[in-house]
Length: 595
Image 1 (cartoon, rainbow, N blue to C red):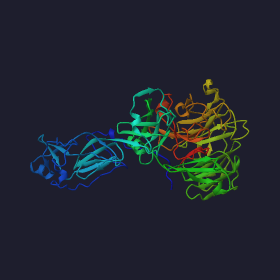
Image 2 (tube, helix red, strand yellow):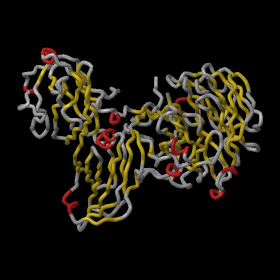
Image 3 (tube, helix red, strand yellow):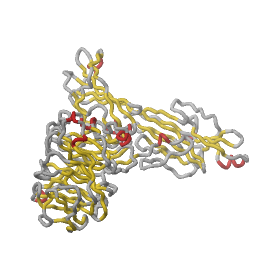
Image 4 (tube, rainbow, N blue to C red):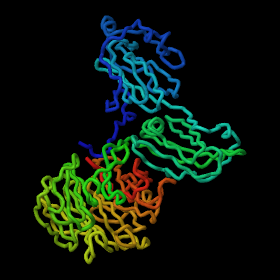
């Protein structure tokens, strides 16, 4: 069973008070039982295994056991580790170590080091290993941040650990000496992808860094953060950070910003461009996205971090497949052949027919209820309701105050159906004008009277937009993303993304996600999330260039939405990133996040 492409907030260990242990999450490594450690072993001998990486033993405490303390008639009143913060450096060929020591304060004010019965916990397995005697050794593959926790009886102590990775990657054919000339500085980043200021999930599989031709013999791309110092040398105009190198920049910097600087190495000088930054969010993306591509005449799937693969196309069905919707109950609904064509529904796992070809009439847009029990479709503004599990037809619901119901989206909290009323439209897929409305869900697929959320006249007239469409309700059911443009709703080159409260109000342009009004940004879709998340992710189709790899046709792009900024009337979006592993030669649309 596929898992929903969900965004999981990792434990914010750095915010944990230093006197208590950090929570142990899915990245926990090195949790050991409270068994005794041989006090005479070399690893526990100060002169052989020093407390600090410089070879000195600064603890100054005598080693004791709990029984020794009891024999002295004393009690433990507090505990700490020998250091509260530790910074180590690692490379691909050399590690550093630190032997953490668990020190207790006794009731008479003296301090003792405990060597037996201490449980050691490291909450980030990617940056190194923690032995059962408290000795930490860095990884040779990446840096990062973690907490080291020692526990003894009812006492716990923590140290914040930072491992900085330092390395150089020289690609084949590069003479790095040419980059040693005098440096001159030039404005502009020189990068064609990614753009400055992107936000990405920490488990993004890779980034294809691409830059302009600056008439250089070689190029130097330098990455720097609190935990990363990496320099890449190349003679080409791009570098694909693969599965070995990307974690050094990506996952290890979760919760941090990474600065990158491009330099063009010429025979007489090194031209250093402006730096740019990317924010690695302490969030993960998992599962799959199913999207529609007319290139393959059907639906494609990207299991996150893997290559795109055929999901349901003309090859499997004998018909073109499109205009799909997915449910929380594991169903995918779609139309065969073209617009206003036969409705189909299959299970996502196994693709078992639920509504076979030409057995349930025709349809265009469709949306499932949040629990997946109901499927709502439209055809020429008329709604049809189906059982979301069996596919059985139920009724043709009506909404008072709406004449042509179109572009429907069901609010995640089941409170409203949000849609566009497009009176006078010649069809569902192509109309001008439009009013975004909501109708309260009364239960069982019945809806109350329509209420206006947004009219075209509510947009700033300076945009010149005349049509609004494609509403998508946010994970907390309080915000709506939508499209606006000067033409009609079908493939409009100036399609632009906005957001508005579900109660109505002043629309906010998603300017950072849009870049400009000439990119054809359309069909925004939310990633599943919880209402209290700091950020939400959304995907959309855009004609913007993907570096020098793809340009002029739609690809899937990913941006974030900050609800706190939206509440303040600010642009809540972030600079978008290309959805990794698409086929850049295809035209891709309608990215839906799949359970």
